[in-house]
Image (cartoon, rainbow, N blue to C red; front, side, top):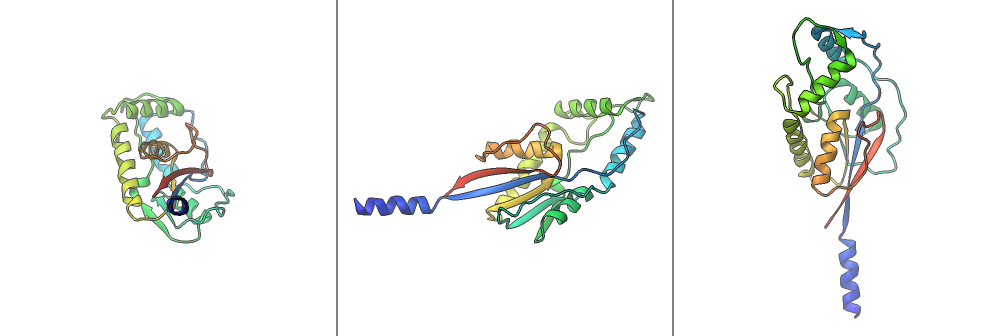
Length: 198
């Protein structure tokens, strides 16, 4: 009986909790776009957003002993990572936001939110109008997670972007991680995903 108790205790002690923290970059400090946009103006606004600075926000992540932080190479993600994490930060193109383009080059003007909506619908349906379809985005999420998890760290912080974080979240669920995230992740909020490993 005693030996069995020791075996049970040993088994419990070998259970390891792996934690992945997902953070969407802080809000971007950029003037609102014009309401009506041509395809070229829409894509110019996308380019401007990619290089715009972020607002200062507060995010305390110190309750977890993070071993490493990975972040997208886009400036808003890099700046966010540098503000919340003081140790090793590894930048990766694989964590960049899912890119979008105007769905047509025709000389028409549409509200900015319509351009965004149409682009995301085309992305979801893997249309050739978009640089990366839904399938490729999830393949990229799977690839970066495999590369990161193979390094062997247990508490990993990822700083990325709203749409790509959903892809990361879905891929993490597939490999046994548990956690909650809104459909539209909030800027500057930490989302915790956990998985038990032996």
